Length: 372
Image (cartoon, rainbow, N blue to C red):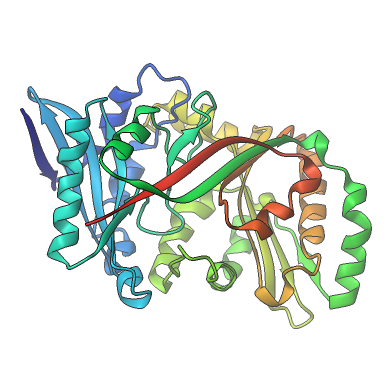
């Protein structure tokens, strides 16, 4: 007998967040989240994403034991502005029991049907800065803090329930030794001169903050052409500032401006916190904070999180400036490996900028969809 219960109280939401710790306790490639951070992100009073979204969190029980979880989400910006009559599901984890998955997804269907929506897609979060996709290849590869890990049977569950692939994402890795500065050093000087551009580096987060709103505006502009994109609101900007910017070394944030000091491109790279998060095991205290701080300062692996270029400057070689900035910083820091976090397979423009570094695709993930 499988029963489904909605998690509403903080204690219940905490159980929702903690379930994967039990499910993946023997899986070395699973990277745990910080429990309090994730609990707070599901708090409708704290997370401004709930201003334009509805979300319900469900737990599946069998023999009085939690055996699965799922979040049912409606992003109302997506539904009303883009006309996509979609209900999302995310934070889906389950034992290898198709009936449990089916029972959890029924709650997602209920939410969609109650709101006259036409199809379901997932796994995905509230916004484009959330985790996305079920892992389809690369189960033997270490996860990271901005991706979900899952067992191979997740795909089988969805396929048996009539789901079909919707979007595919790729992740890749390359050693920093693959980067030949000759490919962009000369171009960097020429592009700066031709378009009257200048770059800016940082050593303190407080010096980055005045530009962050403009960066999010550029992000909205640069990514708006992608079919799955939903713009970030002003309230969400403030939230993401607090949630993400403090985790990033200021040296890993790169901005490029035109002659009028207008931001036209940016890059955000993050230290690899995977091993630190595994050691922390969901808790910052007493020792998790130490492991996170150590990784922030000393990790020799970095994650390319976001690169954004204003549409009018795309295909004009601006990435040469960004790569030159990062090459100098990574050389100084002794970086050895570079990871590209999930990028839409259809986003050929972003894939093209990495081709000279001979990246190896080490993971693939997909979202799946089904009509209601």
